[in-house]
Length: 490
Ligand code: NAP
Ligand code: MG
Image 1 (cartoon, helix red, strand yellow):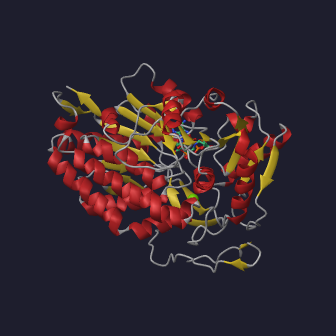
Image 2 (cartoon, helix red, strand yellow):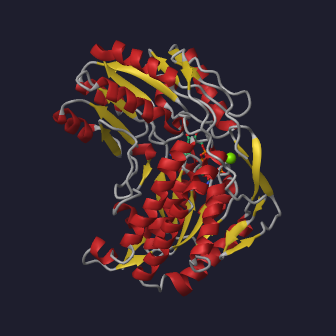
Image 3 (cartoon, protein in one colour):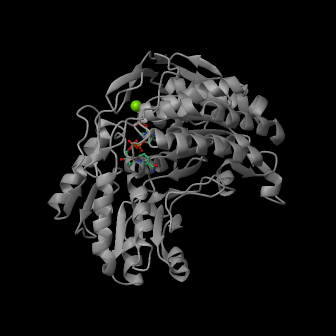
């Protein structure tokens, strides 16, 4: 099933990398997936299925069930039963054993998970193999460790669980987002109904198989696939006690309205428009590499992508020259090739959104610069793109594009850049590149962003909390903080 590399990428005008495709012969995908409810595979009540497609070649990979509100109700009932009869009564040490087992099984099947993640979502195999899947396993390991230590995590408090958690996740890190949601909920004694994104359900369904294999009691984790209406049915279900959502700010607002006046607890992990800031005293080559990683990693399908760049005026020419050189050497193409830097855009819909922003960027007067690479004819692709001469008012500077598009601006003083960087409705993450520790501390305290990386970017660890200010969300996931939304103090 390994796809041929779509094109040869030439750069440095003299040589190319040979193709290095990861094989997909070892993976096992069913033709059709039902819903995972109460530990069993259940057909959708309305008999509806939709296609899951490989965005790199538009070929169908499998069919996935579309859960109706009736199916969601069945899943919530299964979760409630498992909560009342088994999971809420089990000791933390016993819960921890199951979570460890899930972590170990993910590690054992890491290769299969990474290949399916790349086939279904379009991200380069290098990322799914080195980032998504190991981090997902680490998340389970980390929270397994807390399951029997909650009384030490919150000393002098009586820690109780919340009940049934309804979780809705996006398409940019499908397995990893499932891990972020499932692991802390299980560790704290809650049961789960989770919905993956419509375009990337397959690794969640493989996770269902693995959960079955782990022997986790039936109904503790229920995985219902579907579209936005399935997500809404979870959010609106009266017997769901807690909502955890990651996705767009628009849907986040709909969810907040939907649960207003109810007793449901909520965490929202929404969009971002991160600023990366390079000072003249920064190690420029290292900074340029970090900027490139910050925005082109996973095709820019990252809520904390460094999509705005602020360069101190004195080093602007050097930084722009190096950025242009570097994007020319980025390899765009087959996600299954181990040399690929930029894979396929996740869906046609998302590609159209990105194209709309490229058009608006030019119309607003910014100067667009793209890599001269060619892109395959089939599938959904976008060349790495820089916008120079951008202004604070431009839509490409204010709005989340969720694609490989970087908007560059200049600044002169620290106060000016803080003011500019904070001037968006978002506040998820930021990056600062400088030789001076004092500048780093000055900026990190003044940036209205949940995470501020210094002289690095896009670094994640399960022990570190993650989440946003302003319209980037409510609550934190990861670390000790990530336990809180799943706990009721008795
Ligand atoms: P989205 O519409 O917010 O989708 C996120 C999840 O919510 C998906 O599982 C989605 O299902 C579900 N959903 C959709 N409408 C819902 C509703 N009314 N109630 C409950 N759940 C609902 O995001 P998207 O369509 O995947 O992408 C749109 C934009 O969201 C992107 O362009 C980007 O700006 C942003 N985004 C942000 C993140 C992040 O990590 N912060 C991740 C992905 C996207 P379906 O997939 O079936 O629609
Ligand atoms: Mg897909």
